Length: 407
Image 1 (cartoon, rainbow, N blue to C red):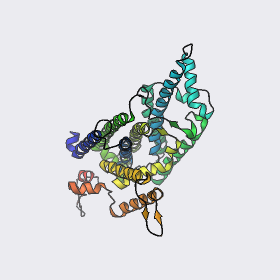
Image 2: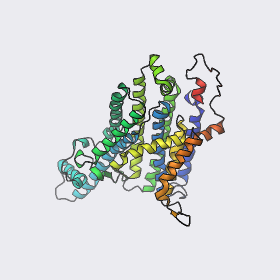
Image 3: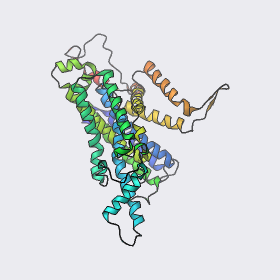
Image 4: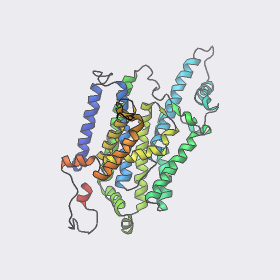
């Protein structure tokens, strides 16, 4: 029923499946080797960023909440899974080292060895309380969603019940991200300060499996997660819930006057969006291999908003297009693959000028294509906003019409 009402979701899933199969058949692990392992990792990370953009579009494009702190939830998801990866992998190394001892190590000795290896770099010999469940994969998977979800719920409850809106809410979300980043930089909080968590690409129990194979596995997982997140976002925006949050975006005062619990709707979509973002981060950082507090810098969340704006907010596929295009272009320009441009009097090094190019692209899209790159897809599909010309499209003048919601 959902797919029938929103055929764009079926098209998206089909394109995602074709893309994943094509990359697999051209990979070094299962195919011809035309696509190197480094590129497979980049593509897998790009799919995770696309899911984060979908989460951002859900809260901004549909609910009208411009969050400039969503990458904090993305990074927290990475920290939660990174703790297990680092603890379990270090445990394997310590166990292998102590296996040659005359007397087998006790569990306490093994735990002390793991703690020394992980936290010796910050001068600590004790396992922090925040790592209490680091040895359990199921527990850390629960925390991947629970910790960012709880933070989003508490922040949203405080902000929305106070009816903080607009630019003030955006500033608060950025302040939250900055405060969390500064806290993580401290060495005594249990997250290794500026060193962060490293070696996350070494999956415990799979040390004998080549990275070319693991990168494909992560690509499959990223594609499945993106498909699931896209369907969840489509389902949320398809029914009454989607109509209400779009109405809140367009005229919050009127929706409140009609008796809807505006704060409850906003809190729900904000929390769900944060958890989707966290799930994307949990798959992104094992492919990146490292996470540190710099990943929570407020500018990262600004980039996320720029991706959605360039792709076209209020369109889930627009968010995916924006994230994929900008992310791949960023990797190409900053990875040294783009040749420098020699102007004679000045040599343009794209590594230094990429952000300027991104800013100009954002301005151009804002001025000449307000609906973003997704407007090209809309034009090909024949979708366009209805020309009302003062004509009412429904029984209630001024209400959000079904045609307007679908366009």
